[in-house]
Image (cartoon, rainbow, N blue to C red; front, side):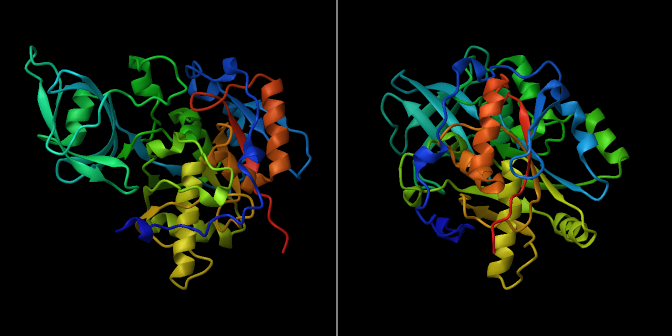
Length: 374
């Protein structure tokens, strides 16, 4: 599949500018560590009619906000230890961040070094004294977004990363990865390895909370979207139509399509756990429309570069659990499209005033979809 084949949408109309999605955040509100317990994080309940007062809750309250007819959809991607530290043949240091693992033993990656390695260069990792050293060959440039390095590993990439890699914590987390990050920067139901960033809204769930939700009769389903490092890249153009969205791989099983259609037929709500789940579900709906099946979802794996900004008409998702996002980010644009720009501004102002914790290890909010007028 080429980059042009990925599920995408026409560029935004230009009615909104990058500055519309900016806000001032006190640095001390950027969470550097997770809450002591997953469900102990705070939950800003922003549901209800536009203008309704938000309610300050804890995430352990989340099951009480669900109806038995609701369907929760989770992203079951698994974060890999995607960051490697090594040296070039010259002795210079090199840092590699794997973006996507390719069969059989290759990967697309970002590389940070004093000078970009050329094709044929060998990069050295592991500990020679301990007998764990291995070499990775740089094959060339390219990738799904034409800006990555093509690497060949001497064996199974996932196994080598698990042994030698580091948790790819976001750039706004100041500490190096620690033992607790291996456990907490991962959902309790993570299954399919491939992400280089966590689906952070799902980090608030533990096994006990999932059991409570199931006991209420609420159904759940899974999608997979391997979150890429592009999720942290800023939008640099004031004109949103000039922004090139990064590409991500996703998979929507037929069982999930069936569950969504059953939920709709029963009058229930589709509740997406995180913006990555929104991107997968809405991409599957756009693909179904293009295949001549409006109102459905196209099952199977695909690539997406869907860019959701205010003015987008949501096809699938009715309610969203999400963390607080970076200023001027594509995710800030997505939540503004989902619940309305004024509503999101008000909720963020409330969260800052009430000292909520922001970003990946921070707190969450619950949003309703605000439909566009016909």
